[in-house]
Structure formats: structure tokens, C-alpha cells
Amino acid sequence: MADLETRELEYFVAVAEELHFGRAAVRLSIAQPALSKAIRRVESRLGVRLLHRTSRHVALTPAGEALLHHGRHALNAVAAAAEGARRAADAQARLRLVIKPGGDAELLSRILAAYAERPGARPVEVLFGGATDRADHLRDGRADAALLYVPFDDLTGLDAHTLLVEERVAILPRGHRLAGRAGVRLADLEHETLPRWKGVRWTGVPDDGSGPEIDDGPQMIQLITLGRTIAVLPRSLAGPLPADLVTVPVTDAPPSSIVVARSERDHRPLVAAFLAAAVEAAGSVRSAVAPEAGPVPAGEAKPDATGRGGPRP
Image (cartoon, rainbow, N blue to C red; front, side):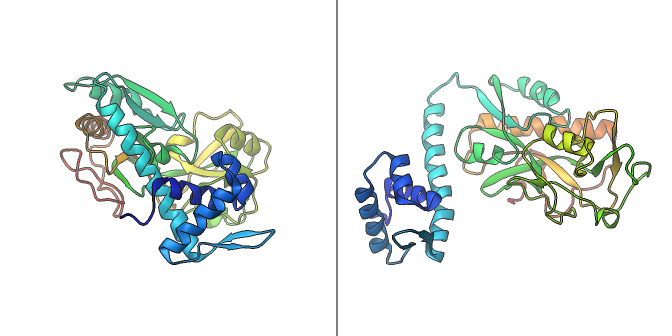
């Protein structure tokens, strides 16, 4: 017999996220006493204490932190399994691709054209996600494939294949002291104010945490124009820019990669065909632009000749 039922896991995750039994009960549309009883039953069955409770405060124990982390993934897997079953029964279902607006490095039209030529290709519905939720679209079944940025997106539980490796650039006001340079180093940016991207881990760039917290690109551009901050981004996310802003390569920043990804549990042929078409389309672009391009940096997802079998992140 399973230690936890799905409903009990949903109850615990709600309490753990709200840290308040009353709010969690409203969210779940159940009575608060019934919710409290269910959580005590879960703790008894697991033999661990998940929550520290007082009359005014609820906090997670280490065991509760672990269950919240794994429980979210488990609930996503259940939702994805149900959605996958429904879609497998629908022969006319569209293939859903989630991307960041403007975050395709001009690859999207080539990818769609390459996929359309494959036998059994389905219509592709393009969904637009935010800065931090596109990988979650794959985990919970809202999307079948995604274009993501490494190392910024969390690839846990995903099968990813590199399409493009690119440099990072600093976005600066035209009158900035570094704007006229052919390139800058990370040390040159050490005392600059950089934004704090809400929910995003911008690996390998300086960030003293003193900059404004931002949610999207337009907000960032406005703040750079006003001289409140600068930004370091992958090249493909840096344009087009207003005339009063410029980009300068950051020569020693780790490169970033655009990858095409699916859930590692999703083995449907139509999704595999889309990933293979994406790898094929990106390969044709690389061959045309940079025939001598070097290997993908170690540790990144890398396609093989079939578009399958890249190492798990």
C-alpha cells in the first residue's frame, strides 16, 4: 500500500505553500478541522513530523521541506500522466510548444518548417511562457516541448538537446563609460548595478543583489534607459534595442545555450520527431553561419545524430 495518496499530498503541499491552515483549507475547499486531521494522519503514517505548529505560526521541518520538494514533482507527474493519456487518445491533438516571447534566436520558423516536412506532423500551437515557468509547462503537461535557456532554466526531469551556443553581452546606455569598448570582462562590471530577475538564477554574471527586481524585458529596458541598471544577457535576448542603448560582448562570461526539451517521461513519437526536427533545423543554421563551430561545452545537453540520447542534466 502506498504511504501517501494523491489527495493527501495535495493537502500537504497546500499547507506547506500557504503556511496557514485556514488559507490552505479555503484553497482546497475543505473544512479546516478535516485538513488538520489529514495532515496528522500523514505524519503518523510516515513516522515523521512535517510541520512545527503554534497557535500563530506554521513552519516546515526538514522532513516537510523534503516532502514539499518531492511532492510538487510527484503531483506534476500525476497531472502530466493524466493529460498525456487524454492527448494520446486524441488523434487530432496539436503539439504544444512553449517559448519565451522573442526567445527563439530566430530559429522558430526553421524548426516549424523542418517539423512540417516529417510524416505524421501535427499542427503546432505556440504558447508563450514567462521568465521562470516554461520548464514547468513540460512537467505538468501543459506543453509537449519547449525552447529553454541553459543554465538559467531548471532542466530537472527534462530531456534536453542543444540547438545553439551563444555569447553573453552587456546592455548599456549609449553614454555609459564602457559603451564604446569592443568587449568587456566580468571584472569591468564588478561595481555596476545589475537587476535581480524574479525567480531566475543568472549563473556566471556579477550580481551584488543591489539592483531593482524585474519581471520582464520591457521593464528591464526602461530601467537601463533611465540609468538605473545594466544587464548581462544571452546575445539572442538582447535585441532589438532602442537607439540609446548598445550591446558589448562580455568576453569571459560563460556561454549560454538554447535547448529544445521535453519531459523525460514523454516518449511519444510525435514529440521525438519534433525534437529531432529542431536539432536538424538548428544544425543547418550552424553549418551555414559557422561551419568550423567547436564542440558544445562540457556539461550541456548535446544532441546525437538522431536527435536523441543527449545526457540528462
